[in-house]
Amino acid sequence: MSTQTASAGSRNGHASTGFGGVQRDESRAGKPTSPSPGGLAQRLVRAVAGQVRRRAAAGDFDDRDPDYIRESLPKLWLLMSLWFRGEVRGLGNIPEEGPVLLVGNHSGGNMTPDTAVFTLAFSTYFGVERRFYQLTHKLVPSMPGLGFLRRYGTVEASPENAERALSSGAALLVYPGGEMEAHRPSWERHSVDFAGSRGFVQLALQHDVPIVGVVAIGGQETALFLGRGEDLSGLLMLDRLFGCKALPLSLAAPWGVNVGDMLGHIPLPAKITIEVLPAIHLREQFGSQPDVDELYDHLTRTMQETLDALAAERRLPIIG
Image 1 (cartoon, rainbow, N blue to C red):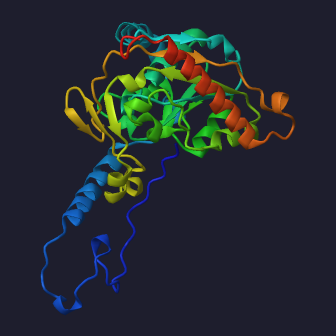
Image 2 (image 1 turned 60 degrees about the horizontal axis):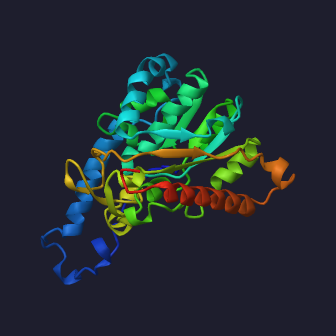
């Protein structure tokens, strides 16, 4: 879920195409023309991007505050228990100490209740002193009311931050499916969708750390997710300006129709159930030179089978 941002490329002054690749009529050179709707939208997005980039901070590993976690944990865990009826199984499958790569499926749009439930459960089970970081899109902690996530160990998703966390001996939670999985349509809620992203396998092999699958269900029932909006995101250059590949559309409180989910939403009280899978010690189980594709297929297949089993337990959406 790496979030590299770049400014929009400058245009060559001798180019003969305008916005949208429409050929200019050179016979009208010098005459004022009305900006195209696409051009106005792109200019507006650029202006907003400048403001957002000033607000968004990548976060620092030193922002994690064990004292803050200790003090806030009881009331937040109570909230998660009452609203989402959070249930986390199999925490004992996570090695008691040392670096470990936790790999999860991702749901719930920008609010990601599965991350909140798991982070609180992890901190309760292992204690707040154990270093634990979660990678996320850097815009998420900049959303209204979510700045406290940095104090829980949330940092910008990047290869550099992933390597730094594991090198420090910490537990690290990553979501290979990123925003595209988190905003998948609600009717695809029971699918693990990493879109072929294998970087996490290479990361685990490089640092020789175990991989632990973290399978969650319920997050995609906290709103009605209608689509990712990749085409609209591309049109507005959101990937280049914000590092966003999606401009999702959903029905969610309090907005009704919610475009982009940039202001967040009030999630429905869907039951969140999370199952932690047994640790995979890569070289012990797959030989001294493991095949990346084999490891990827093994983990995604096992996670999908677990998600299918969790789905079979549910009686009704939201109710669980």
